[in-house]
Figure 1: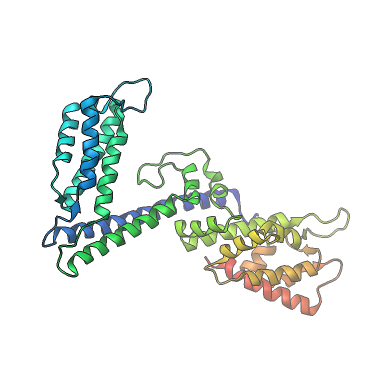
Figure 2: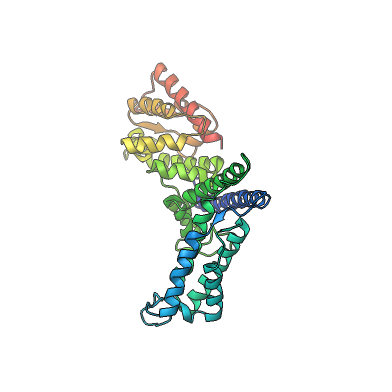
Length: 364
């Protein structure tokens, strides 16, 4: 038996991807609820016209000039001569006319409707060959106007409450986007391209049995920090246990031919595989253990004793780590050193250190 069988690694990778998708969906729901709350509060104001339209109208005037002169090609495709006037002209004219004739102030809901309309124009422009960038410019000007509400004419406290509600929604949205646009989050797209847009599964460019290795980056403290927030502490611990078990397996090597001894555990190789031979690797390992009941010092104590004992003979390679760490027994009970045995203090220290490690390995 192996400690991390192929099927278990496949299941783990799949579980990490599904968990990331669920956590993104929950975060997206929270952000949506915060923006709805802001909109309700804004609509209930004694004077809800708190969105200034100066910048929106400036962008609209620029578009109107382009439509009138047709002097500037408004298409990213070099082979086409389409302009914004060619993108359903009547709809565009109506759209621009509405923007240039906006009052000085509008409500938040009216501003949201402008965003929805510009999104529709942008989609149509993309299909017909027009320049969607202009529609996006209007969308961005509306967004900036909403984020710079003018509540100077509001009664004390009324306008500030709405601004605070918007700030909370923007903060939650910013946190969500920062996390799920991170390099670590992008690794999930290699498995499911739609993992963070609440749509049907769309295969990426790697297989399910490669997903764990693609997602779990044990060399980067920042990647581990993000991964914990993306999949949650319990699944993060499960992924970390898999990495540690893999490191152990790579540190078990055959005993010298003809010695008649079982396999040998190379503690120095184990340290290197865990990344503890470099400062960056040590920081990553510390991040790996964050949130568990085990500290890096516990593992360091174990490794120091094991390295001092030189090569350790594994009586039962298939259960050495599983039984001695996961089930809580002392490593010293399953080890011989060289042709003799550990000293009593060494055995006690090794047993104590291994029990500390078991706290992490047996608890999700």
